Length: 265
Image (cartoon, rainbow, N blue to C red; front, side, top):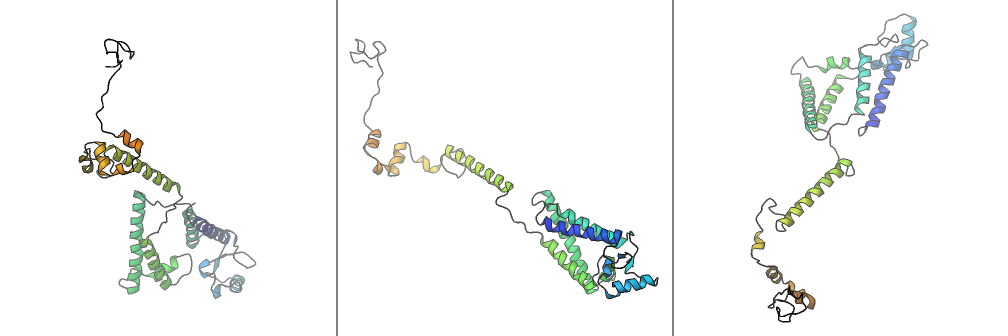
């Protein structure tokens, strides 16, 4: 279920229940014989229970009520609104990708149409845009001025768009962090293999700072690390005249005439 879907689901089910109960069973009427009430005029004084009973007893035609089980345009609109609100509770809008872009563009276009319609009606630029004609088409009672204001506010909200908040504990966030850490690890491995710097990872040339050292001993002395050596480490780095010899292959190191009794060559 989408975020905030529980509230929308409850509202959608309430719309459906009220519409079906009113049309099929006349549950909203308080008259002796159940009738279907006109929800647009439900709160008006001329459509009170006493007025409806008076019209029914005297066979006076009234637009405050009608026979049950008769579906009209306003009832179908109420039913459609309930289905739409209920369906929106289970629909999650994409935050990324091509569909997110398409929905965002459609929202901007539709919001602009609502705002332009409200402004044109307010300024009376053309007689073809009139909220006084639109208001009676809605399944609920609303004044033209309120409809005009509602269209402008709805259009502004659609152009503004929804502000998403990323959940740091979501699975998508965890996967994104894992991919970023893996990328950093690979870059550090590449840096180690190319001279120990994160700059120019694609370059195969050694770093400029390493060119001035010909041996590890040169780098050791340049960095001043000799001051921190103990006697054992100093012995490992002595630069005396050493020679490497191998065991005599005739006597296997026991000493013979070939090696002069030394056991090595």
